[in-house]
Amino acid sequence: MPNTPCAVPTCSGRGGHEFPKERKRCNAWRVAIRRVKDDTGRSWWPSLSDVVCSEHFITSDYQQFGKSGVKLQRRKLKPDAVPSQFSWTKQPTSAVVSRTNRYTERCAKREGTCDRNSDELSLDVDVDLDLDIAMVVNVNSEEQEVHDQAIQTDLPETLPASVSAHTQTDSGTKVQGFTIHDFKNDPKGVHYYTGLQDYLNFMDVLASLGPCAFELTYVNGKRPSLSVPDQLFLTIIKCRRYTVNFELSRMFKISKSEVYSIFATWIRFMHLQWREIDIWPDSDLVSFYAPSDFKAKFPSTRTILDGFEFPVKKPKAPAAQQVTFSTYKNRNTAKALVGITPGGLMSHMSGAYGGSTSDRQMIERSGLINKVNKGDSIMADKGFDVQDLFAPVDVTVNIPTFFKNKNRMTGESVARDRKISSKRVHVERIIGLGKTYKILTQPLNHTETILSSDIAFICFMLVNFRKCIISR
Ligand SMILES: [Zn+2]
Figure 1 (cartoon, protein in one colour):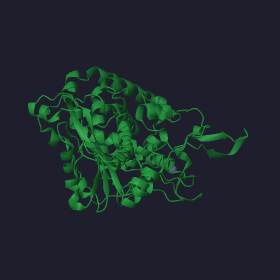
Figure 2 (cartoon, helix red, strand yellow):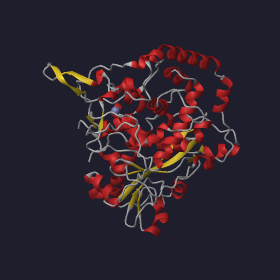
Figure 3 (tube, protein in one colour):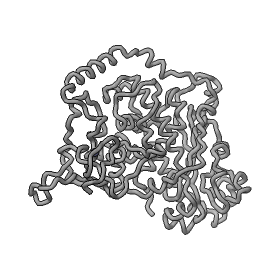
Figure 4 (cartoon, protein in one colour):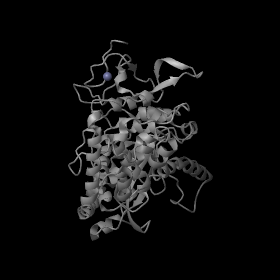
C-alpha cells in the first residue's frame, strides 16, 4: 500500500514492504523494528496491511536477478531480508572515522585497565546462604498467556538455498567481534554454538523474550557495547559450550567483566520472562500432541517425570556441602525435577535443589500437585513412589512395579512395566537434549550455582524451541 505509514517507530516514511507471512521471519522483523504497543508497552504485532518502508533495507537485501537470471526491473526483497537501517543504528558518515577510533581506544583501554582482581572477586560471590533458599526462585504467574502452542507447533523451514553470501554494509565501521548476524546462512554454526536450528530459530527465541530485552538493567550498571541479539548469543553460547568468560571476551571483543555482567543479567531476565509463559498445557492439548501408541496405552498421561542432577563445585560452607552432596553421584550436585508431555515438550520444572534432596521432596516442593487435574495420570520412574501424595486429588502415578515386591511378579505386571519403561524413554531423551547444554555437565562455580535454577530452566526451554524429536 503506497500510502500506509511505515511501522517503524519515529519513521515518517510511507509505503514499503509488507511483513513476511511466515511467523519466524515476521518475528525477526518485529524484533528489528523495536516497536511496542503504545498503551501497554507490550509486544506489538503487525496487521496484514502494515509495512516497513524501503529506508530500512540495504541494497543487498534486494534480489538483483530473477529466477531465469534476468535482471529485475522492480526491486524485490530477498526471502531472508530483515530491516536493519534505523535512526538508532545510523551513524553520520562524517563522524564514522573518529567514532571508530574512539571505539578502538575505548576497547584497548578497557582491556588494559580492566581490573583483573575485581573481575575475579565478582565471580567469587560467597554462597553461605542455604542453597535451597538461594536456588528456588518463586515466580507466581497466575494470569499467563498461552504461548506454548506457538512454541510447539511451529517447525522451522530450511533456508532457501538461493540466499546469497552475506554482505555486511556499515558494520565495518565498528570493531566487530563474533556476531549472530554472521550466521544467517550457517545453520550448522548456529546449532553448534546455540543448539538451535538456524538464524531464524534464534531470532524466534529472541522475539519470545519481548521488547524488555532492549531495556535491561545490567548487573554492573552499564549498558554493554554488544547489540541485544549478540548479548543473547553470548549467553546461549556459554550455556551450550560452557565457554569460559576469558574466551568469550576475546570472541566478542569485550572485557571479561562485561561478559560476566551480560551473562548474569540475561540468565535472570530469560528465566523471569519465560516463567511467565504457561508451559503446562491443558489436557486436551497434551493428548492431541501425544504419539498415537501413547494415547492407546496411557491415554490419561499428563506428564512424564524424572529428576536430573548436575554437578556443582564443592561449596565452602559445610551446611551447603551437605545439602548438595549426592550419595547417588558421590559428589556435590544440584538437582531438579523435570516433567515432559507425551509429545516431548518440557512442561514442568522445579527449581534446583541440593543433590541430597529426594525425588519425593522435589515433587512436594515443585507445586506439581496444584497443576494436575482429577483423572490425570503421571508416569515416573521407580524412585517416585508418591502415589500417596496424589491420591487425594485422584491422580494415578504409573511407576514400574519391579522393586516393590521382587519375588512375586505376575506376567501382567511385567508387561505393564515394559510398557512404562518404553514410554519413559521420552523423558530421558529430553533430559539428554537438555544436557547437550554443557553448562549442565561441568561443575558450576559459586555464582553459577546461585543461578542454577535459572540456568537449568533456560537450557530446557531452549530445547522446547527445537524441532520435536518424538515421532507422533
Ligand atoms: Zn520507515
